[in-house]
Structure formats: C-alpha cells, structure tokens
Image (cartoon, rainbow, N blue to C red; front, side, top):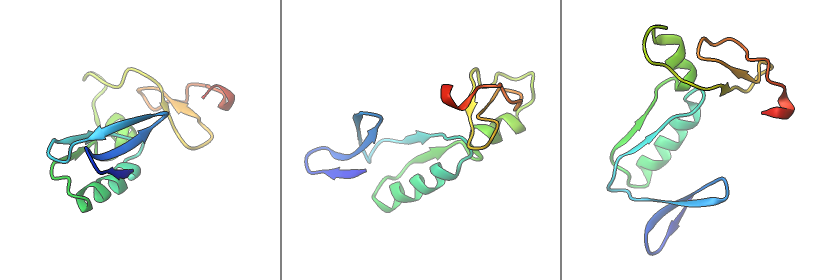
Length: 99
C-alpha cells in the first residue's frame, strides 16, 4: 500500500491498483484471519475508521457455521499439504501445480 497524493490510499491487487477511500467502510476476509488482522491494524493506523473482517477467516467461518446454513461455495486454498478444502473442510485433492 502507498499513499497517492490525489486520491488517498492505493493498494495493489494482482496487477491492478484499487483506490481506497478512508471515509468509507472497508470489509475484508482471508483464509485464516491473520492477514486481515494485520491489514486492519495498518488501516486503522493510517486513518481508516470503519473496518470489518471475517474473524477467523474463511476457515473459521466454515468450522463455526452449521452445515444447513448458506456457506462458502468454492474451494478455499490453504497453506499446508491439503492445498485446498471444500465447504466441509475436507481436502479437495487439488494438486499444488493447479492451485
């Protein structure tokens, strides 16, 4: 992230810059919540007021939400030998070269 003199803060996402307006709420999620905790602290330290995150990340959400409720509808890439898990936290069998 870096500050743009004209429009506030810019964050690099992939190959794009995304302008962030510090006066608008920011919502974010990540795999386990740690990156969001760090990013949230950075955002608060740099003047962003309303910051929301999925505490515990996608994995925490899947572990805590009952199976009958609407859930994550995709694979979730993880940073261990499982590579990716489904909505029931079962390994999908995805190979690392396909992640």
